[in-house]
Length: 145
Image 1: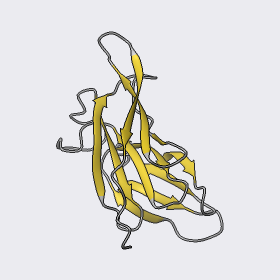
Image 2: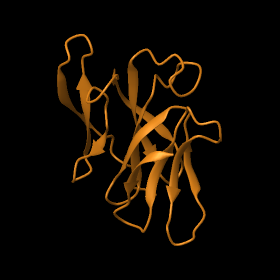
Image 3: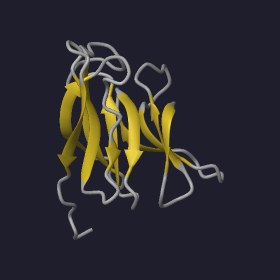
Image 4: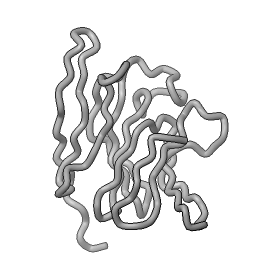
């Protein structure tokens, strides 16, 4: 587990249980230093980096390979990473973007904008070495919850 991100709304952190790990289930976990048990927020065989919205309702992860490729971790990764929105309450995942992934800094490292309306991530081109910042507007949340 690693690439932790402290929560804004609660005493705890989100962490990724990497696809390369032998233990399972792999995916996005909530951990708390006050004795509450770890909770699997959303299963994922390739979760890599994560962030959490300020209100704690959404998370975002990037992946070590395409979500739809067979395998886990770096198996069949092909220098691809997906940026995925996670509903904290349900664990549901929504693909936001697909981008390249190789060595630093050419992998996504997704983060929420402070107002929570978009996700920013690195968008790198391994063939040229260029890196840009991509902005992905988020779908509006269902206000009936």
